[in-house]
Amino acid sequence: MLGTDFRTGSPNWIDLGSPDTDAAAAFYGAVFGWQFVSAGPQAGGYGFFQKDGRTVGAVGPLTEEGAASAWTTYFQSDDIQATAREVVAGGGGVRAEPMDVMGEGWMAQFTDPQGARFAVWQPGRTKGLELTSKDNTLVWVELHVGDPEAAIGFYRALFGWRSQEMEAPGMTYRVLSIEEGDQQEGSFGGVAPLQDEREETRWVPYFAVADADATAAAVQGNGGTVLMPATDVPDVGRIAWLADPGQAVFAVLKPNPRQG
Image 1 (cartoon, one colour):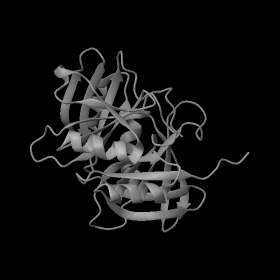
Image 2: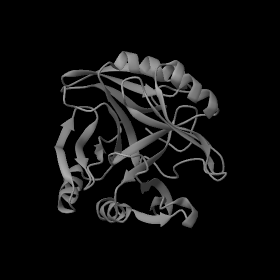
Image 3: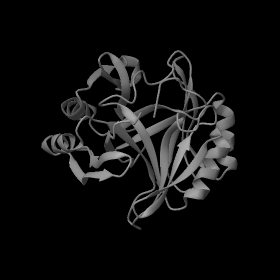
């Protein structure tokens, strides 16, 4: 599961691009109990979601013309310029060139060869998220893509990720882990094949919750949408797929208790 001792390839940041950041802050405050803290007048409306005073995500206004509201997952790079070159060499695209974010770190935004959007954060003063894998914080990230093997090859070239196949209902699921250390302890996400031709290629963040059913009800009660009702996944836990009022997709997971 995710920690905050970030290494190369670790998911170290998430943010939401929203058409109405005030409404988004109210929604996620109601669903997850997050507090919104502005990054300041120079940040163009960008700010942080916090739980118990620690940053668990961020939100900002949409900046690309025609962009849809969505969560973006950032992965750690120790050389963002080299990562940008490797994205292009691997057949991906650069949506936002590497830029220095006021000394807090460097960021860049990309699209992988199959169209999934992601970003990279090279830490400066800001190392990344301050709390993960607790209730109402990021616990997992998942790529839904037409060709899982090709996707894993692309990201392995960028970040050195390892993958391990496991059988899941109706599919072969691939668990991702960072290159260093124990593979199970270093796992942070997975890759799932698209189940429907209408399904979008994308990274989806999962937030840990104490009760997936209650969270789905809170989403619906606050103007969001339940895309997949809470469902038990063997050996994993209970999950639900949801969308906020701006149609940004995310998922929640009530993990099974760890054995031993």
